[in-house]
Amino acid sequence: MLIGLVGKPSVGKSSVFQALTSVPVARASYPFTTIEPNRGVGFVEVECVDKDFGVQCNPRSGFCVNGRRFVPVQILDVAGLVPGAHEGKGLGNKFLDDLRQADVFIHVVDASGGTNEGGENVALNSYDPVKDVTFLEQELDYWIKGILDANWGKIARDISEKPEEKLAKQLSGLGVTIQHVKHAILDKQLTEWSDEELLDFCRKIRKASKPIVIAANKCDMPGAFANYERIKKQFPDYLVVPCSAEAEITLKTAGKAGFVDYLPGDADFKIIKQLSPEQTKGLEFIRSTMKQLNGTGVQKCLNSAVFDYLKYIAVFPGGTNKLSDSKGNIIPDCFLMPPGSTALDFARALHSDFAEKFIKAINAKTKRALGAEYQLQHRDVLEIMFHK
Image 1 (cartoon, rainbow, N blue to C red):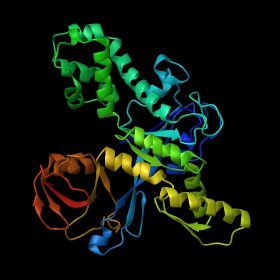
Image 2 (image 1 turned 180 degrees about the vertical axis):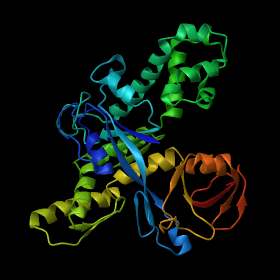
Image 3 (image 1 turned 90 degrees about the horizontal axis):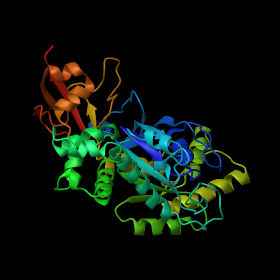
Image 4 (image 1 turned 90 degrees about the vertical axis):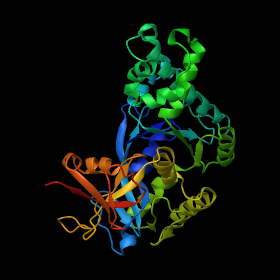
């Protein structure tokens, strides 16, 4: 799974990346601070199963605090996008190519209205951030169309394959499946499609294969929350999350230094060390922002992308008589599985041999035996039995 951070320059995209991953990156208020894509690991929050068994888990990767398990996911921050990117403007071609394998996008928008369409600083609220949502959609639609346009004559006339198979093959590099194509394809010969019909097809493909969560960033700035509410009203089909990446970075930094007690996704924090008046004032400003946003919003963006949009579920390996691995680590692993995954898919995720020699799965909570086609449920704990 790969989550792509997208947006025009200077909206705080790299700040959101740092807030999610704690990886320091170049951050500046001028366009194209990010040239090469930044890769890092963020953590989605899952309700851990350790409390179901009355034990304390020892994660092999990620961490767990009071039953809140944080599971790693890959995040990609790419160069900023400007209008006309699909035509090569700005760093457009590079931006789009870097995003090919992303499963879901978090579109970072400057809700303060303080950056224009080119990512240049302007007076707060002088630019309408609603425009950013529309132009990203258009750029992605034309990007997909450009891939098909390059060979459309040949694709349309070729009768060696079914139309949906041809289109899926052409777009496979974007993660588009034949199921995506079947839901979007027109009931007419490809040679009869108009240019507008092809664009509409690409629009449907984008919606199905590249879901978008909107991060309304800089909501700690004057007027930004009202802009967030306008974006939310104008795009009811999107999940729009008000957030402040700078607040999240500050709290994580303060937490690491031992000044505050804070866990990503919390709606508040606790000051645990004596601070200067200036530091206290700064943190209290963050607290007032968090009251309005119900947190910093950053963790919610990531959780929503993985669980609400991609519909992934968390599944834990664990035995019916033993929850620890050979080193004594209790419930050390958590796997994020795509929707519709089966017990056999889970066995394959653990090890290819487990799938090839699969006998059955056993639910560690209920002790029930499950077949290969059993559809996984969120927070399942399964033991895989296989021929040795």
